[in-house]
Image (cartoon, rainbow, N blue to C red; front, side, top):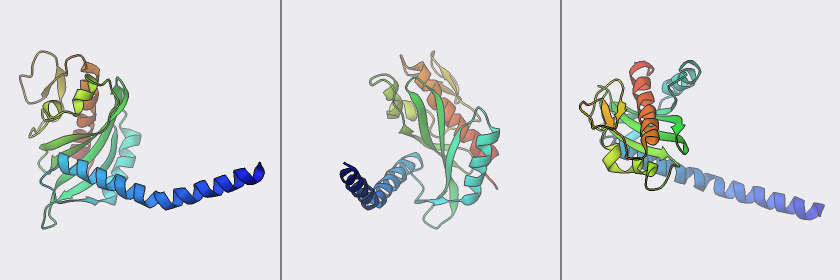
Length: 187
């Protein structure tokens, strides 16, 4: 029994080592694809240690905001045109919602892409559809609010019918990205 367990453990470790790099590459490719959806004008997304250091500091000091990760968005010439900020909210009906938000240097949102959501199919999962996500696009506001009665300003987001909790959670995550971009990114 010991020999079988030992051999199984070694084989499992070997398989893990063989598949580790391809899995990481596939995850990076998927993230890049989602970043491209959130910031379509960017050609590449560059790691910036100063932003990552600020994310670590922000997690400790900002109780309501939940920034997770940030990259610099660059154009074909290598000029910085904005940032892609990943943020999350734990307020969703199905648990954590994680989004990537493209934000120009001027503070305008270029797009929102959901990275993680596990809400009710047909209700909360509608947050991943363009009809909901595109409400944030091309807006320059400090903070969004969710409304059930129809938006009357750029800062209002129409709630998904039957999924107000999810609508609020996504909005909180987008607000966290906006706050981080406006107040925490080193200039």
